[in-house]
Length: 155
Image (cartoon, rainbow, N blue to C red; front, side, top):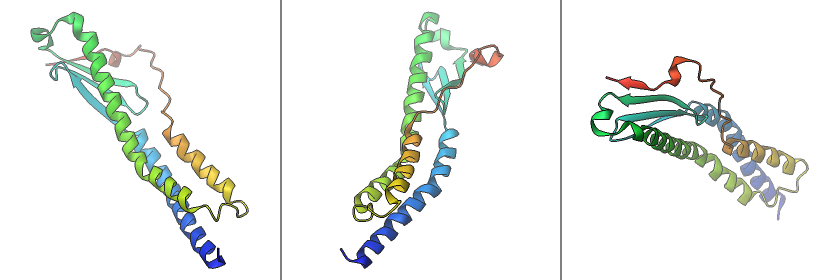
């Protein structure tokens, strides 16, 4: 392969890596502020989950007992929380999709330049940072001592 081809390929890879680094901070910020609300029991139970997959709010409509049994409330809260976490995961995956695509592009075109001094290490570092983005955020610890841990009854 000619020097011009390698130089061109290196330029493409470098541009993709720089774009990846610029987006990394932005995606981390967006991901950390995600919050999703889901419902169960025909909308009478509402649960909000934050980016750390922690339930931050539970609202039960005051008319819940008109249509449902109190013994079913736990299952409805669980169902809504699970739906919220699933939506949260989908949104996080959508945020990461452009970075994953760019990572594939770098892998596909970096074959000839990977042997250049220091390039393999730099590429590994970028890959490690992108992998860290895929890790689930650590849950926050809630002592349950504050009043917000009780469900809100919506009137």
